[in-house]
Image (cartoon, rainbow, N blue to C red; front, side, top):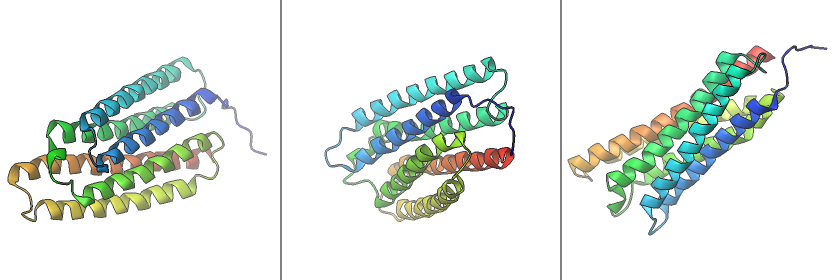
Length: 208
């Protein structure tokens, strides 16, 4: 039997889970952009609210790290995981804000490839939210990081096809510049989800 001197402190796992659930809320809000007649300002404002809540969760996590004598796993890994979850939320908020501030939703339609990228992010968010509670037992997590990495590859493909669409001559130069910035934030969010998954894999290997 394996003995562990680490506590089964539930607060850390609860904070990770809440942070991941906010990512699901974020991708669901971005999916609203595909709806006809969507209020883009409302989507952007609600994304900012979710991002502020995620910031509060991250601050609570850091405070908990500093006030806990023995943590459930390495402090550096707890800090890194919390920071990476926050990074994903920052990218999601940036997408909504840029689409609104640049007035891109006034186009006849957003590129189909952009919505495909958002769909990939939505799948990654749901996977991540389902995985976080399992950190407590460190079991049944391998499928999560494998699938999250596979989805990141799908996101890369959608990103490349979006760039092909942007530089096809369909859009004027200014719109291309604006849309490219949005595309880069979407791709960065996909990468950030993969970094979360890779960190979970590292933690699981260390603790097994």
